[in-house]
Amino acid sequence: ETGVTQSPTHLIKTRGQQVTLRCSSQSGHNTVSWYQQALGQGPQFIFQYYREEENGRGNFPPRFSGLQFPNYSSELNVNALELDDSALYLCASSLDRGSRQETQYFGPGTRLLVL
Amino acid sequence: GNSVTQMEGPVTLSEEAFLTINCTYTATGYPSLFWYVQYPGEGLQLLLKATKADDKGSNKGFEATYRKETTSFHLEKGSVQVSDSAVYFCVLLSGGYQKVTFGIGTKLQVIP
Image (cartoon, rainbow over all chains, first blue to last red):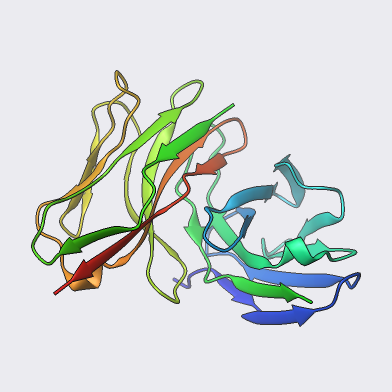
């Protein structure tokens, strides 16, 4: 059983650029959630994808968008990057059985620096 | 909305000392509660969990009991080791789409 993987591990962009981060979910999981963790803070929920549809969203602007693919892997896209977008971006996968809330397993994260 | 209040660190303890990290929450319904740990330079790892009131989660000598009456999920360990130095997050899972709410994180430093 493989764990959650994310790529790239580190990324440097400049203000106004666009970035795509990738996540491969743990084998057997059908749900992917994305989080932003600023330095010294707890992770903040961005959004969740279940069966290729956005299933919930936190307090993030529309320039944060995502995709989930048929194999349950996922992408996070951020347009018009701002300096405050510099953070560790975490992906977590879980198995949604409908009525049961399952544990989320986290990837190692992608550290994004916006200059 | 849901929230998690966690004691702020850093917490510095000597090896073999007793550890308590306080965590309280507010939530609608019947949330599940977790402690995650983030070791230096590593990703978040699940430490323990409890899915209903009075459940006790335990792992690696750490314990936490889900107390619905006090809306708390305090983390304890009887004897900490240097290798326990990390940031600990109290986490609540609730809501129709598995919304996860993190506490601010408590940095633990254990000195020999």
